[in-house]
Image 1 (cartoon, one colour):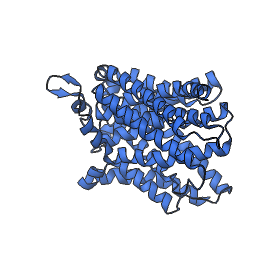
Image 2: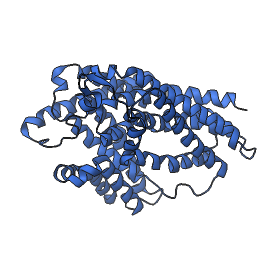
Image 3: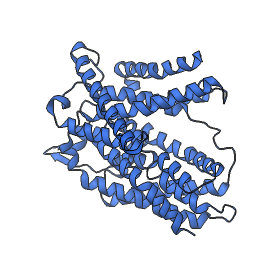
Image 4: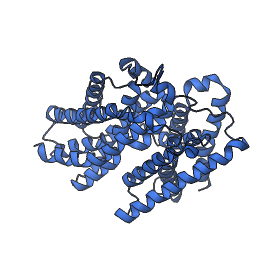
Length: 390
């Protein structure tokens, strides 16, 4: 039991060390804080540090602590990262955001339908339901996947196989984007939106991103605590509203509420000028990143259907390729494409780590909005796919 609490302490301590190294050494600045957090988390997983014997009290306690921290860290981080954003800039990118969203969803639908007819096999009678779950997970993340699995009555073993393949194929893609793959997409989609004469959105957005210098000076600490207090207040309001409307802590309602409140707050100059709120938000994102990466299991696929695996791989590759093509046609920027991909494939909580890695907070709100819409429509699209496919 003590070991579980020590690991939780490490989850908090590791981001502190990463930030200190980032402040002092150029090699860490080149690697990036988010990449470093994911790398350390994976190291925790591969060494077995975070593995407990299944079913033991320590394992259950540790799992609950992990889930609690992950479920709180990102909702606290999102407002902090949004407070000093200038959303007058974002409104000019709205048409591109809509195009990227629609293009991404259309790409997933085309990939799922084409893959179904290529890989469908009589050996798996519920293959249309597999297609439905893949539609859900790639337009809103695991929440839609689980909702579709439950509503369609999918066998739990089949769900586990599909999810295992999805994690094995998608996780390296996420790490690729965060680890520098976004630079490749910037070259393929070298487009920028001009907001002021001689300056681009990206230049405005990346100003002072992840500048941890002086973060704990007396002159900054007070402002950061005000920002943290507002963020916790917004989370409490979101949780209360979710409980009132659904009787559960519905993640869609919580994230939508805190995002809306944070955007409204950012229009007040005193809130927008609170010091180091973005960096404080990044601290919580680094905690989330270490934990998520520590959940990585290289042995997650130890059986299952080869055709399901091929189908999942097809959907991911074709959906990403078509989405990239659609964004190229519409002159969508590489950074917006990246956050769109992560928002649709993973869900909004995974958008901030990508934004932090790219050091372009301009696309933060776009990614969250795309992820929220994906949440909202993904389940409906999945049900439609299940009903339409033979």
